[in-house]
Length: 94
Image (cartoon, rainbow, N blue to C red; front, side, top):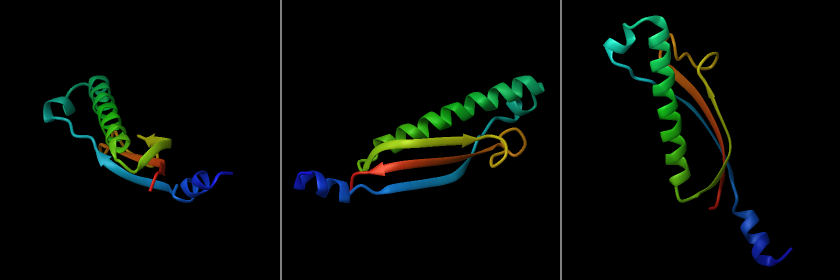
């Protein structure tokens, strides 16, 4: 393996991020029928997922996102308490 490749490999750090984010809907959206409320929350959650992933991809030390998992039930509670749990595994280029 060439020296440059070995040095590059030493600087790759795996980063695991996990957390939760709140999915905010208006009072009007939350008081709609269960089906409409559910659809609205899913749409808003999808927007947050895309925004978070785009942000992380834009961070200069992020080489690639190896894995991402979003849980709306179980670790998350999108339809009851309006939050989603997320996990990312990221390779950095420090």
